[in-house]
Length: 165
Image 1 (cartoon, rainbow, N blue to C red):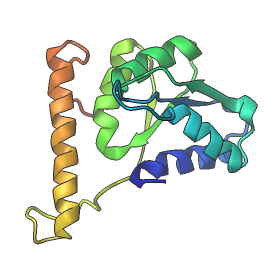
Image 2 (cartoon, helix red, strand yellow):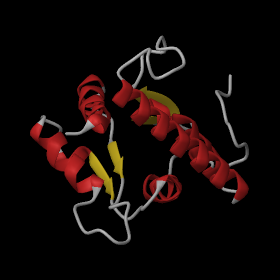
Image 3 (cartoon, one colour):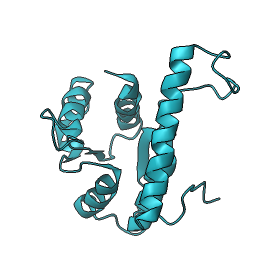
Image 4 (cartoon, rainbow, N blue to C red):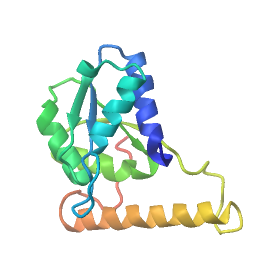
C-alpha cells in the first residue's frame, strides 16, 4: 500500500461498522499510456482479504479521472431519494471530489481520510521534514490546478468549493 492506502483501510472499517452497506470502489487505471491493474480490482482484492464479502462490492473500473469516477459511479448505483452514500477519499482531494459529485447530482457525505498534515505545520520548508513539505506542496498545487481546470471546463461550479453548511 502507498500513502493513499487509508482509503481502502477505512472502507474495510466502515464495512464492518455497516454490515448491510454496499461498498463502491471507483477507479480505473488513471492513465492512457501505462498498463496495469485498475484501482477497483486492487481494492477488491485487498478488501476481500480483509474480510469484506465480495458480493457487497460494486466495482467501477473504467474511470480515468475523478470526473469519470463521479459520472460512472452515479450511473452504476443510481442513488435513490433518501439514500445515504459516503464518499471516502483523501482529505486533500475531497473539495474537488465533492464538487464533481455535486455537479452530477449525486449527493454524498464527505468522509475524508489520508491526511497528509496535522494542520499545525506552519508555512515554510523548515517547520517540517523538507521532503514531506515539498511533496505536500506539489500535491496541493496539483489539486489547485485540477480545481481551476475543472471549473474552467464547466465540470464544477466554483474554482475553490467548500463545505455546503
